[in-house]
Length: 359
Image 1: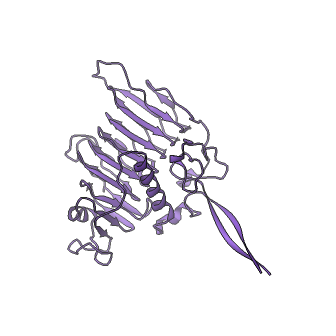
Image 2: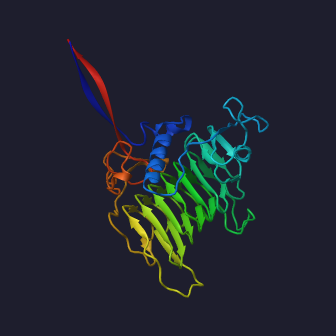
């Protein structure tokens, strides 16, 4: 009897799950594995992100009670904010699947980990922001969705416009999250700070998908930014600050893919050279970019071939032209070891080794 290995290669659009809609009921391979891979590689490359290696865990579930200890899944808090308040620096708040109507305020050193971008949803209830990251707060947030922010300016009392996620002088990492259906001004709004947005779906927001206002060193990496009503990414700047836009799919936004907006009060007309490499720009109504921006290396202008954009399914078809077209540097490789795929949802090939018995 001879036993040999038979290798089976299975191609998956997202994560080992054949259908994005299955995420509604699953924590899942993709949300955790891709997020931790990104965080580990970012740390190895010297980027300022926090790995989720907590001192303590805190737990939240829609069936919980804020009077519970919140330190076990059997006695969770009911609200995310209550768990954030209880937690200390280095702790992680684990949030179970469900919809939480809250206006979260992040806390320095406290990380948030949801059950997946289609499973754990923070609904702002049409007021303020779904998430606000205050000055000098360092946090990592993964596997959550933020939606239904308020309209208007300064509704949150912090001096700026509303958005699904607002970061002010922050040092935050947002990964494997969805930011969608938020009211004007944008999905994500960053003032100054050094933040990283990676492997997120930013879609169907009123305004821009991501608005970087005087953002000193923000990185927009491997995001899918689509269906926003003013444009994909906006950069409002007049000084020598930088932003990196890498490995994204920026598609089907009303307006430009990337919009450099000059400060009308600026006396210095010189703008920094932004890094805009290995992105796919497609079907943005006004064009790829506008302003003093020169596209860098490896950018495409091809239909990314989502499985069903009309059905909010942004997995890649097997013949998508953005597969293996991201930055070829090994630090950006997909989880299966192949070259980076553009966008938030890599098309992974999982190799299974099955024993075959020959009599």
